[in-house]
Length: 291
Ligand code: CLF
Ligand code: SF4
Image 1 (cartoon, rainbow, N blue to C red):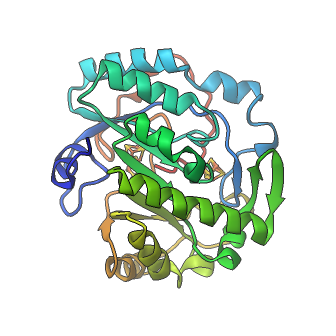
Image 2 (tube, rainbow, N blue to C red):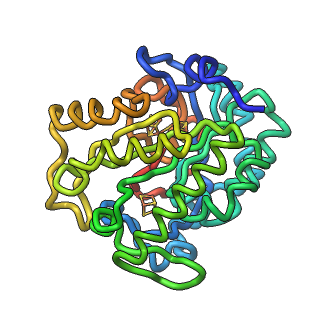
């Protein structure tokens, strides 16, 4: 059964429109690999699945359940279990498997997943069946000529595809996937990384397009200039304000994003207890978490 937006606004820190609600969340770093190459993301994608540092940095689904048990005991304000990396939630089955286990043991916690959406069209039924309550899809452009400047490649059906063709497939899968899960009652939030030189004038179009597919909340994340986009400039406050204003014509805008790490635990922008929860060193490189 889907959770009403009014309830999410009280219990979910990233679905609070207006005032910050001080609800807590735990991120479980259980998704090791990624299947696309965002130009602002520092990960080395060619060997993500097997690289020892990355493999030892992620939890197994059973370990994740135990971690949630300890976290809610230590901090009852935690209402949300989220998976936001370090790779993509739908690139492997780890996240969905974990959410099924969490749903059995903690039926009252909100299950929150984030994805780049490449596999969302194909895996929409599984997402719905796993009981995901809130889903975030990172959509940086809905025009392939813009998207190809932000995304370098996708791994699709075992093949690496680049450029415009990759962008077309990614956008198609994102939008079709959003439509399916939103129609099933999952609350969908869209994240867009704002790169003023590339998608600065495109935000209203993204907002309109995703709202038409059933997304209800929009979060604009300012670029952290790094990797292939290190020469791009970080958006100014004015640019961020203008982008939010443009989006607001079509969709409700969330404004309290903290650009969390994939292993953050606590209240975004408030108390963080991740050091107490993740007792062993997780060796997560400082990757972008798509929250
Ligand atoms: Fe985590 Fe993301 Fe769920 Fe929130 S974070 S998976 S929706 S529970 Fe929140 Fe952090 Fe911003 Fe993400 S403040 S990065 S929007
Ligand atoms: Fe993958 Fe996320 Fe990095 Fe993009 S930002 S390459 S989706 S891990």
